[in-house]
Length: 261
Image (cartoon, rainbow, N blue to C red):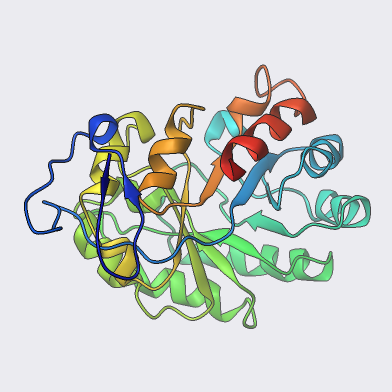
């Protein structure tokens, strides 16, 4: 375990991340970390019962989705309204109408209509992200949808992990209005592969947003994430037996305690 000197600072566990330290308080392939933010625990919910269990277990925020067999699509506005009435913590609503990450003009028109319905149902925070056919961030499509959010905060989801050039993708995200979070595993294959990559790069810090780590999250990943200054985690499968099973509040509580340890 090595302490990186100077302010701001944090602890880095190179043995678990496979990142080498160099002399003079510098670290190869990484940068100084900002002071840790309070932990943020976001839980995927497909039902009102999921949302209630997530809140009871100590979640800070809920990502509301449908059809996790398709990696998460936009939920019904009625479900959003029901969740909003059932819990007090923030809800982030998925805006994704089809498999994959591309959106043509017809799909964008459908999504704009859906956003209006979600807003009417009480949605105030969102999750979205688009890539072009050649795998770059589709800034035109993203801006079209973001403009319809009327300033609501939003997360760019794991489309960033599937970009053809992730460094360019992170650079493209800088300055997008309302963007305050990027959900990423550091790799399209998930956190098991991506955690060392997150430790070795700094573009997510320069983007000026909070990194929300998710995608195959395991309990063993949390200390490593914290050691590189990542204090926001996103969990779905880890807090339930399967996507057909409800969220287990005791599993949420266990993650809460691990994140805050």
